[in-house]
Image 1 (tube, rainbow, N blue to C red):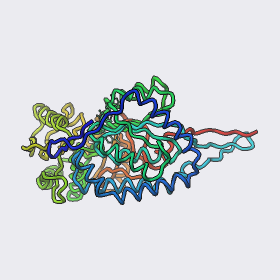
Image 2 (cartoon, helix red, strand yellow; image 1 turned 45 degrees about the vertical axis):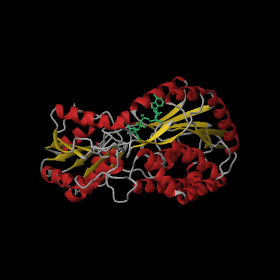
Image 3 (cartoon, helix red, strand yellow; image 1 turned 135 degrees about the horizontal axis):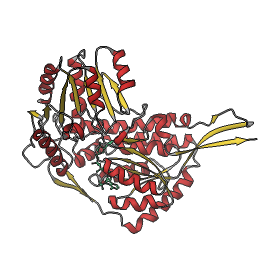
Length: 453
Ligand code: NAP
């Protein structure tokens, strides 16, 4: 398994794959670890999580350089990612016990209550775009609930996968409580079918999600699916344009546009359309490619060559269907996988820029004539991960976010982001189930009813 530095196109790290014959032994080890770990009181688990948070902070510079080396994001974004992982460790160290407290319920019993018990070995299949954060946000609540975890990480970030396992070991978690398996996606099937593996969570594309959910479904095993999105950002006639543009461009350009909750479709009222487009263009022109390890660089490369090709194909096809190129629309020359910040205008239903997820620095803009049309266009999507609405009338923004938009997270006057305190997940082809907050930790537990005569 090799990683290629996307900024240079050169091999970065390489590891030996785990032999398929060894998978069963690793699952058995995880099962033994679960039996031990589930006996730990919450305070014991929380102590280890705080140790882990401390190690993340201590090793922040090395980890950040590893993330940037393997998948290309800007070094300051890698550092923030590591800090966020430490945050989620401490958040669940502080709150897991409260979230999973027994709940008394009055019934015909002398005593009846619900208790949240761990399930066992939980498999996580994770993507490369936030190679630490995605893993931590699944693994931390899963472990705090008393489960053990197996990680199948994306094949282009094996160094991150190995480093994460080492962190758990060094933080003093019992042996094999968290394990990384360096395997190909074909081997995921064997793991899901193993009787000791009780549930699976996948963050990735709808293709991977559908494949994993099908196998788990055959085995009647619980799944959580965190899939893609093409988040709509509604810019209404009364929006404060400067603030809206700042949020929209930041939301689109984080991680070179490779975020599931990136701002992807801008649906803009004709009253503010020209000003919005001009301001977005001015801001996007400032993103310059360079070495992502250099603090001054503003544009990171796309994580893999094949993914850049896919972005370009989606842009070209949208143009052939009538989208108008305002800027960009090209690869940057050189060995790295950089793609020019791109603005597509006249984006309409049917075009890839409207229907699909573009995982790159591409702003797709659609002009509308009313609030109702904006809402209709926003909901015209098979996805439903995030959405945002920009308006000076906050109450109206809340009404639209609450009642009208079909998405798992709807933000008013801000770009969509994940936060350990808030539930995160989607509807439609963006998946099901929730991560983070009290909702996330209750996905992989048995909500057991106890009834006493
Ligand atoms: P991906 O190609 O679907 O890969 C995700 C993970 O699934 C990787 O570990 C991959 O392993 C594995 N995988 C792929 N096909 C599989 C199969 N048939 N069976 C079992 N495992 C399989 O996605 P990606 O390119 O890494 O990530 C980008 C996608 O993730 C985007 O669509 C993005 O929106 C989504 N995402 C969603 C969220 C969310 O919270 N909703 C967050 C981040 C990203 P290999 O690398 O070995 O193929």
